[in-house]
Image 1: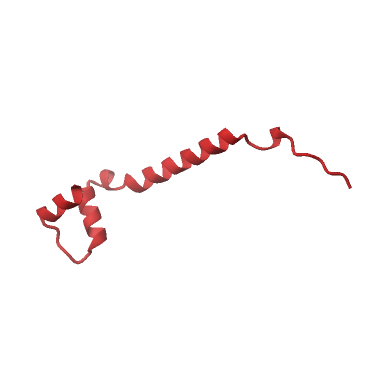
Image 2: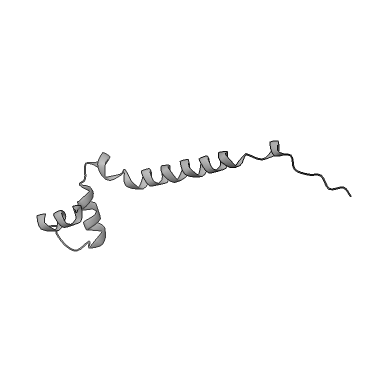
Length: 67
């Protein structure tokens, strides 16, 4: 039984792996942050509704979430 070494051409280089992870991370963050804008919803209203579903938002509450 012989042991052969893995050539460097068989696996991606380290910078390519890091670039792929950064690209995937940026795409994930964009996918999570983007939905309120295309739907026309106010992002502060979306956050407030996620925090407390039973409340009707007041202008003061929306202003505090935006800060």
